[in-house]
Length: 114
Image: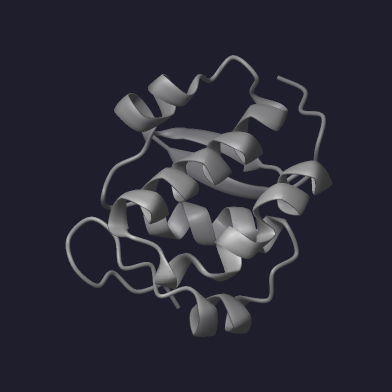
């Protein structure tokens, strides 16, 4: 498959994907939420993470629905790492991610991967 956008390689469910940078329009609407994710409720943070990852993935794989993403591809073991990969592909500095995004979602305090 030919992808439209360059990005970072990531394996989900045994398949390699190219994680595209987020479009500027998404960042314009959600940058404040992304930067303040550690202040969000667990449900708000989880929803933002899923929406952000889906926005990135559907740029190169428009056939992947949000439902497929959450029920077939994402799980507790990869959600934070994939979110960090999306942010990295979008130009966020990794050091800044670790400082600003502790991601207290799902089962207590899950920290960003190093």
